Length: 353
Image 1 (spheres, one colour):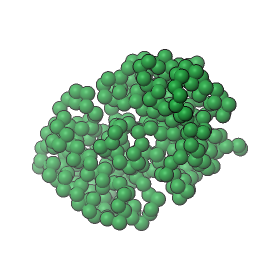
Image 2 (tube, rainbow, N blue to C red):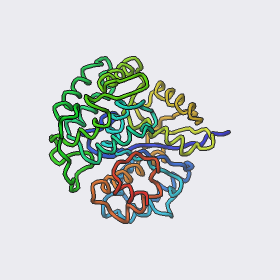
Image 3 (cartoon, rainbow, N blue to C red):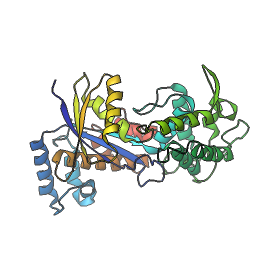
Image 4 (cartoon, rainbow, N blue to C red):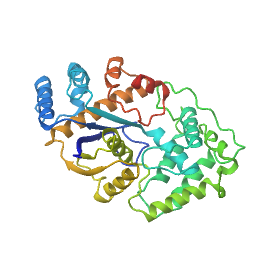
């Protein structure tokens, strides 16, 4: 069976750094168009926008003076309509979800684990709010940046969580106040205690979890995870590109059809990482034939994926922050992947209804 070629690019990507980034949302677009159709679509954008730029970006379409072009680009008369998808990740929710996966279940490559207890814990943390310090320490603990240091990031995280009253059942913590437009998942004060006990109370006193082999502390599970990262240089828990690429293959390769991904040049997709993705996908009955890297400037399909990812990310992020544009939100609905990782129920209802 001939492989289906999908052009992909991302927006809001800063590797495994999910907290203190310039954007709260990561977006990964997949476009299924022939090269001639993609080139014609770019030519139409140039005709309408009339910018001398050699490479068009989402910022061109997001300018108010080009709103009509954006409406056309996302609308039903666009070549992209029904021929593209955008996988979204709410970065704070993703970080909290990975944290509870590490502490209570087995982390998976393709997004978040299906474990009910872990999802309930991450949902509670996100809904009730955590502190900025807690999120930063959790992000650092799960990053692969310094694989050789197994215990240092774990100790730092548990120091922060303990100081906030999150590692014993006696501390009460403080309920996060209404966010009033702030990004969900954070308390109003940024450095306040937040509702950290909401994470730990279901796991027992002292952050301990009960498993088939007995009781294991959250610290022990975190150390075990970092030992795995030290021993496996291809293991990356937090990189949103991993679930995004896997979802692109699942979305377009349903039924067992092989998929080839043509991706914008990306240092985080070396051959060993691609090989790991291929193994994970084969285990799920899916086939990623290969990943080809191409510069968006010279590959029209990738340039369209870049523009689509950037525009949908900005529209979705505005909706997340409570300042969405009703018309634009409605236009992105056909593109938003139903399996996106999103924690905020209100904005998700707008993006997917």
